[in-house]
Image (tube, rainbow, N blue to C red; front, side, top):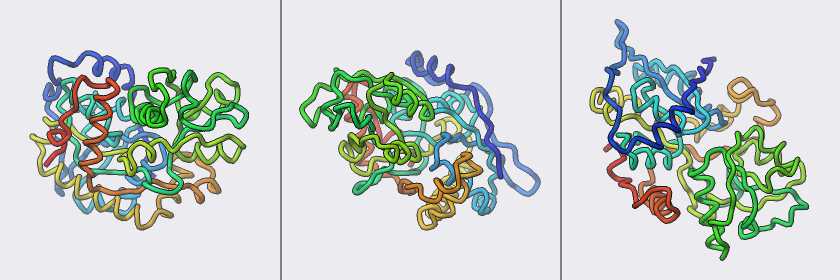
Length: 325
């Protein structure tokens, strides 16, 4: 099993995303991948340490990347924004992360390119992430989050953005919700101790909290933008320009990998005990998001409109120009 290498890039992410308005640092170094005598190219791919990321490992184990002459080294960051600086500077070639972070980076001057789709929230039924509150909290709907503390893994990202939109749709003031940043693994304890009023969590944290008797407040992705892409793959514009064949082969390998993951979800679940140190019993019952290498550009456009609506960006981002054609 390919082990994850953890990249310490969170501080760099904050610095770059807060002050990169003058242009992109991409291209400051050569980032052409080394190739062996057999033509195999070495690439590094960033992943978020959550269950859907195991699909990349599935592609590695099944030989899909090798078939496309790619040797993958996995690296990990807390969120999509954490890997953006490494991708931008060429330290990391590709990453899997949420599209909002990519669009935000693009709007701040980083020359980022979305290569393919990856995973989508479920448009109907029980979704793969949601907001949870204690059963005795009195919080029964998104509107009840007004004036409350809500934990998300990253502020100014898809969690708080979609929660704000649902609060607004229900007639509440989204600006009166206080969002706090916490790692997913710490949220259950903080909720139990009353340090936060509600938490936004993906699987397996969502199922675990509900099984403990907590209350589902909203499937915020589903209520705000049904079928919202939760993750995409991306690279830098500079890397794409220098390595068009590698990017094309990576896109083909990811599309094939994600089709396999979608049609064989049990293969993804089988990796989770090792990939995430998840109990086997939990992994077997885990609800997975939809895997798809295709991009839903219209929904990404709606996401961009919400980013402008809630002040994450000054104007609607250029979604079409961010997607690698």
